[in-house]
Length: 205
Image 1 (tube, rainbow, N blue to C red):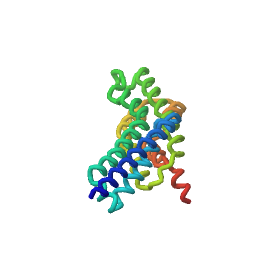
Image 2: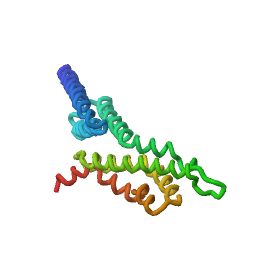
Image 3: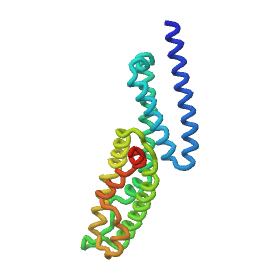
Image 4: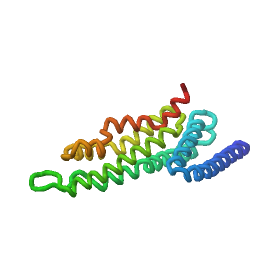
């Protein structure tokens, strides 16, 4: 019994030490991109939690409390990562809800309203291009985790984006301006998000 307790304590110390080491590496990765740092932790916390929870001996030895602690690290990293990736997009969407777009007596969007929509769409277009370029190059080895992260990101922004897209699509703009500002319909945006972490899939071919 004394040996078992000593072994459990040693394993927990190793896991805690590994967590500190991973966080140090993540801080280095975050200098390149905050999202990269959190995604690094997600991959590693997921690997550790899955490794322990699916091993009957380890999970039984460490107990529910320790398992929940490792799971919480993983869940927190996922939440912060999704928040980090979607922050600028949500900021643009929240600052320009469609119901506040200015209209005139004929229910037509005013010049000021059009400019506000154009400014918002420019920010969104930049977010889509930047995030697509960066996230598709990041690896998420576990296929189920890849699907989950894509879904979480899509769910965070899709409804608000659809409302804004509908508002923008109804605004009378020249063909040139429509092509410039309305680059991504909701279906195209969903396709782009589905390409995040695609380097993981291409490496398996």
